[in-house]
Amino acid sequence: MRKTRILVVDDEHLIRWSLEQNLTKQGYDVVQAGSGEEALKMVKDDPPAMVLLDIQLPGINGLEVLEQIKEIDSEIIVIMITALGVVETAVKAMRIGAYDYINKPFNLDELSIVIKKGLETGELKKEVAHLRSEQTKKYGIENIIGGSRHMENVLSMVDKVAKSDAGTILIQGESGTGKELIAKAIHYESARADRPFMAINCAAVPETLLESELLGHEKGAFTDAKTQKKGLLESADGGTVFLDEIGDMEMGMQAKLLRVLEERAFRRVGGVKEIPVDVRIISATNQDLLKLIEEKRFRKDLYYRIQVIPIYLPPLRERTGDILVLAEHFIEAFNKEFGKSVKSISKMAAKFLTEYGWPGNVRELKNVIERAVILESEETLLLEHLPQEIVAKTSGPVAGPLTFRLPPEGIDIEDVERELIRQALEISEGNQSKAARKLNLGIDAFRYRMKKFDFFK
Image 1 (cartoon, one colour):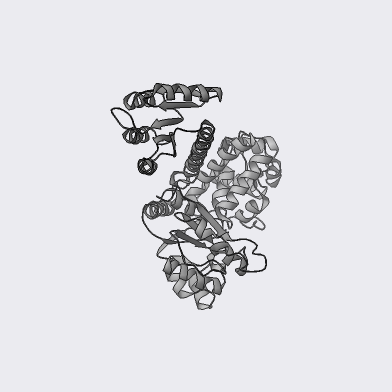
Image 2: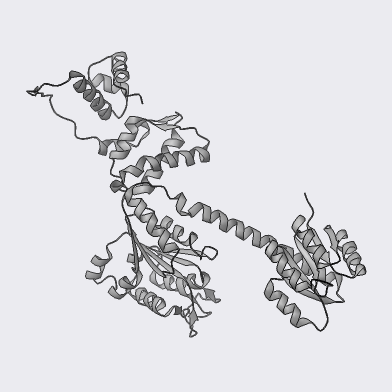
């Protein structure tokens, strides 16, 4: 494992030598530079984790070197070394991007503590940056599956909204359509991506607790308030708050939320101080808010305040072209997760998947594919791998005694035979032996006809 590299920049040889001896004993890889120009070349050639930088240097001074280091690599931790009486310059260095400063003559033990804290801060910043980058990759628009016209319109709107300054957005759609996924895409595609995304389900939290969760509370505000607590609005300052199922929010809390949206400020429960907040509020619901307004269960003024930018997510049954695309995406994901190797979807299974109504929308489809990948070992997802309710609801009612009248223009008997094979498979849920018995055929004769009419794809 490579040692942490520290660059010491000072025009006094004795100081450089002393620091190198001390820090090398502590396990660091220490390199030296006697001027700003030399230091910048070393930073470009092999960036260190930290720079101990003297402000008073010949040629380029320490502040200029600091600025150029930050341009080369903003993640390098820089600690300024100053002479007594130049605190103003050290403070200026902090504004430019220095982590801290230490006065000459310095205590080596104190310097060791500052170095350790600085390196820990640097590592923490890298971890946070990495996590945010991963979140952006995971929830970016390009990861939302759907090529139908409906979804193209939705994603176009998401892209525009994310890049705008819109402070309130309302996402409407049935349960399972992916409202939170869209909310996260808006957040992580926006300039707020490096700030928090905080979500709460308004239907799952009682009104009294919801107020405390959103606004926070002061110590002693109620019986169990042993300490002061920041709410989601305060914690997400600069970022996004996602209010899921806002249609279930009680009227009293609706009034308080309306005030927050209008004033862009709030008071903690039990508090008197106005706390300004800069957050984007994204609300979501699967209910008809206009109907709730008629029923006096939702405030009209709040409705018009939250739906400045409305986004409607269509149910899966209205975008059937996305069903197989989503199914294949989920198969690929669950193959990786469970170590399976499902490679395709049979023609019959695909037919049933696309004709099913999907009342649970994308969430239901995901669960169906997950179950099939976990339980089955074939490389092709077959009709028999699908849940009974999908097959039953997709198949039409079974006809009574067979009656058939030849049309005057005639008919191709192979079309009739193909349709009978198809219906037998549907009624038998893909079980070939049962389907063969429905047509009073042997299994070999039945499979011959399946092959003849290309049912094995």
